Image (tube, rainbow, N blue to C red; front, side):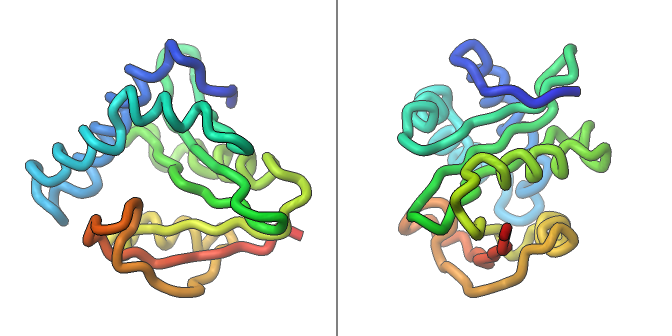
Length: 162
């Protein structure tokens, strides 16, 4: 498997992978209908395409030659901090090192920043544990993960890179 920059041709596949991953992770927490609503808004091809044009950002995928097994989107938010907006791994590829590879790559995307921040849904215990194992610490909370008004409670985590 290798990491590469996402292309426009990848967006349909990434959107489908995100829908699959979100349903696998969040249906039990929010219900299938709410997850469908969120994935249509947040993970549609137009929403993903918009991320590709964001200044000072990187949109990468993990590709094993047969399918895209994971994706990550990170941007630099100020002189010292980057924000990991998304890091998802297809359910069938979880536990195989895809998330770790993506995380190492996004940490290197902006060599001048000294820390990376993220928000993770507090009920997603597996993701929280993943980030803690990889050096992130809890620094706060946000009642609206993703977008203002989402109502999704999140833990804010940070990792000092250098």
